Image (cartoon, rainbow, N blue to C red; front, side, top):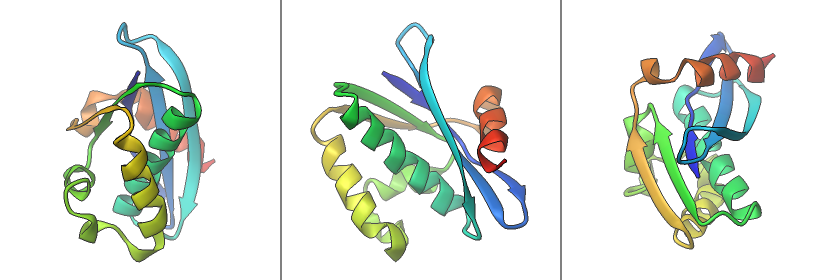
Length: 125
């Protein structure tokens, strides 16, 4: 299962978290979107990553390719000191779940997925 996502700042105090699940043929298999209030972009990216890993686990999928437009999130999988204390438990659980599947994380430029960009706007609303 392939997952593309990014966050978009919609207002001064709102960020959209979203995820789009695609199969290896790029067919959309599912998605999620919700808003986060009064946090920052990194927080929103981390929350979306945690949610994507949790959904993958709940759906009993064996593979997840997480594409993220934040290099800090990619680095957070190697160094959890980048993760806010508010997310430490959720992050630790997500990292442990990612070890149970074939997990790949990579960086994607924000311009690489306009569908996720629109979904982020929807998540805040």
